[in-house]
Length: 289
Image (spheres, rainbow, N blue to C red):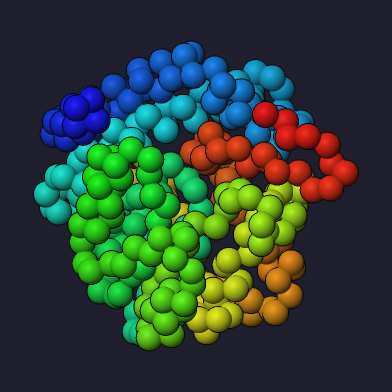
């Protein structure tokens, strides 16, 4: 019952003017920052490891902003998944190298974990006539799980593949001219991961981006979503040239290096609440969390 009440509130809040909704998100973000001490520790640890030259005040300021953006993005799902398509189109600007998505060339979209990751997916499935697919992790709360699944399938006819289902169907979708919306920049455990630098720190990183691109004979097109005062911008960047190279470790390193450039432009909007360094390579000591 509690989950249904939360979803009802989220949907009702989606009808508020965006400035008022964002103000509520600001208050909620500060509340979460103050109350969820364990997750605040995760964010602060990630920032200290990735930006060792920053002062403690800088780490704290970005951490506070991170919680605010996290809360605002969650509240925004109330209108993202329930408001009219016209309202979404007014609040979400799809820009950039859209020509890279024309035609039927197999495409892997590298979509990093910025706070607006669901907005990027919605904007693309709403505004681009292609067959999209992505990889989905089941949520423990089945009510929330159903809500998220329905939200992510709102536009077009996308396919959501379970993380435990294997890659055969994903490769088939790519080779038939599909588009894979991929978010590979998290720690999914050391199994089948490579320890490659992320801000100079060895981080367990799945090499799925170069693998899917190679197996699906696909181009790699980055998509970066930014939360703004007016809503969101979803920028499609030009396709990467000469990628993948065939060197799995080098290609995964290149992915992280390019990701760092986008994070540096808006560090508070990255998903620092994730335990990015929870697995350590042999001899590197215990996880910092």
